[in-house]
Length: 525
Image 1 (cartoon, one colour):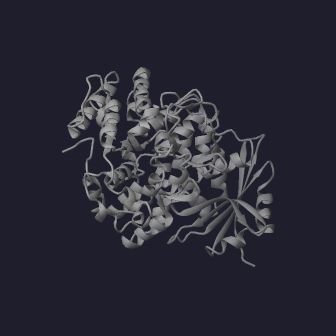
Image 2: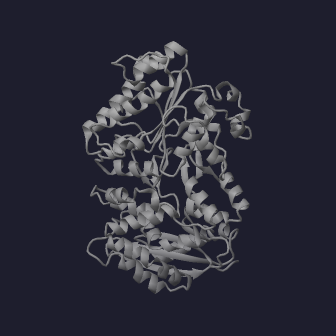
Image 3: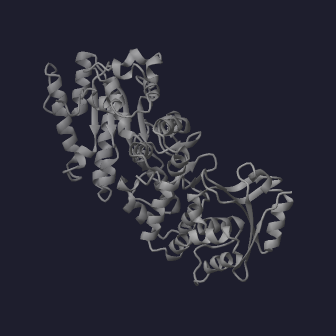
């Protein structure tokens, strides 16, 4: 049985025998690149976002050693004009780079790739003469010349050697040089119909450009035409929820929130499938193997990073320059690099329109809280742990308790956040009320009445608690906050969702670093 060339369609058969969401439209995008200058694709996405599934699907579709008509007949791609043109028409070389990093050190990984793959290709074409000094590409060129065949390369976990040998720059450079030899040399197009590489990180940058700048890159930061195939859409998850009698709102709370390209609502596909398969929502993120790395990145003492993490845990968004990162986890030089790594790993979502990142959902938020706890951010963890009590005090109208709790944030000599405006205050307040995301939909800058309410908390389905409209003031008064809620008629919009509403006015005094709170029950006119 082949390991690297013409593996057949057994992998995709197993996928089709399981619950399957049709993402075969991806094939049409790849088909459009074949035999063009854009035939080299590097499609990177976070762990658990279907990288290997897509690679197995492409393998089954292109491999000429099998007949895959029945596997695709009922899928989206079957109605595309390019379907028959490329179905099972090519020799396919499938490389899972984790196979080569296991048991090999950085000094010999490239020679192992060359040796193992070339041996199998030579055995597949016994009638094509091999020269003693041929490398893999030399022999592929000879096969193409003798047979007229052009190869499809599918490379899964392309960046595994880069991550495995992060502390061995020479090994990483040798690997990248091998990729250059295979796919950047002008002769490559004589042997290759197309290349589909997938992994977590985009291609490493050397100075200002990619080491393989002939590749078209699609990533969590810039997914391009591949965006809709990165995760599950809201409609796809809604259909799964109905089929499996699951609560869609719960699936949304746990796994939604990724903005990928133009789609503002993309779900983590693996976590959704785990949840519907097991019949319950919980974190399936812990098994990704990236927690230690994330904890280390968060623990880096870059200026402003801690404040940004706190802001995002509180539901806020922060600016990020994603262009600085060299796509090398061993080279992290500042806050923007850390945030960009977290985007590629799936711990943050990226809004390309505003160059902002944020925590997408409960599953990821809980894992980030664990990472914060690992770094012993005591006051932050304390605030999160006490957030349930703070919510209960607010719901019973205990403004004194809320005031004391908020003042406690500054009980230490070092604040967990540098207050300088109402947005910063909103981030800390959202963090202090962290528990509410279990029972409420959280809206910041919520359009309501004749303006925008700072924070609006609307109860989730089957939660009988009142809604909260929270207005924040800076060096003013709690009465000014309550008055603004009333005069601008913020509660009127919220009544579309719930009956009872609490108005919460909070003021922060910059000089004294003291908070004040006032809570009223809204009386409908």
